[in-house]
Image (cartoon, rainbow, N blue to C red; front, side):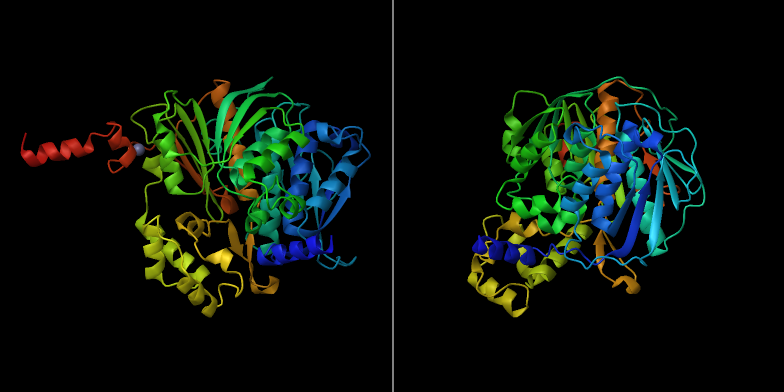
Length: 507
Ligand SMILES: [Zn+2]
């Protein structure tokens, strides 16, 4: 046992799981008894507790004793379930507890006129946040969780903005998961969530955000085929995940990501059937006879997106995240429209930045990293290992961790995590933002449901926005096939090259 503990301590230290120093503040969440008894109110609260556990060091729940309405909290009070969840999820276990004089930020969920910094609510597809009390917004639905999950994300965003001094919420604000651009003002009542068969590519932070959103609804039905080739949960990505807790990261270092996800979802009584495949979307599978109906793309690399695009699924719902940005794209309704690869073409500039990042992480030269990434059969060598040690980027006596890293191993070190830098008074360190991938996954869930329920589609297929500035930064577009897209050209759906050739030959 002692040996196991020592090994675990070493693992945690090596993966740098210790939370990046964040805010020594207490977040107080309060409810009236009426709102606390509603399902939507409980979804907002549960999600908010999960986000707070990764961002702030203290939590205070001013919640009346009401029964928990989720299947995994049966026969217990909401407060007991949330306190336990905070305990297993928090990244702040090793920090000294906050004193009574620590600053408090207060959130009021739903109706009620208690004094609070933020008032938050939801209604079906819509999330609502306000600096003043909100009246009569939570409806007694027990079906659609997307508005409530988004409401928790908006609240966490406002908390972070307030703490960082990045602007304050000056008026009531509504965000719609039906259409974040607000071109469509729809909020249809739904009575079931039939997902049918869905392929989910990627069980990382966005993919698990998609699953997390659906976890809450007993009304969801269907089957998910979950693909991910990662051998384990990535501890460095912990603060970006919302479904996996710190305890999961500590206990599942030897279980593949998809096996962890399947087991954990079963523990929660996930309403959909889940089948897992421990590999990435594979170009070798292209020969498949079956046309793919619906693919949720939650992968984090352009080559993985291209692999999905090559299958020409009938519909792809894709989300990608940057530091604080979300890009949501849909594909497949119209052959004229951009495919997934049209949107995410290889960007040489970005690629150069990535190579520099990897070189910096490993202490290798840019030339050597370029060489290694350019040839999948090359592996890092003993010589590379010595260079890494000399640069202070590798541990002596751990050659197995470094020698023989292949292209995939190197590229997994891409720094694509959602991070922002804290001001000096907070230590100036980078902090990951769990609400970015969660909101992205939640929006994918909303799009999937709209598609399956045959609700009004968005007039655009491309949407990008900055979560720190949602009010003013939403840019919907309708993107067409890119003449340079390799996938579209390969499938004969772009005739741009042909036209150019015709011009050249004078025909
Ligand atoms: Zn294309």
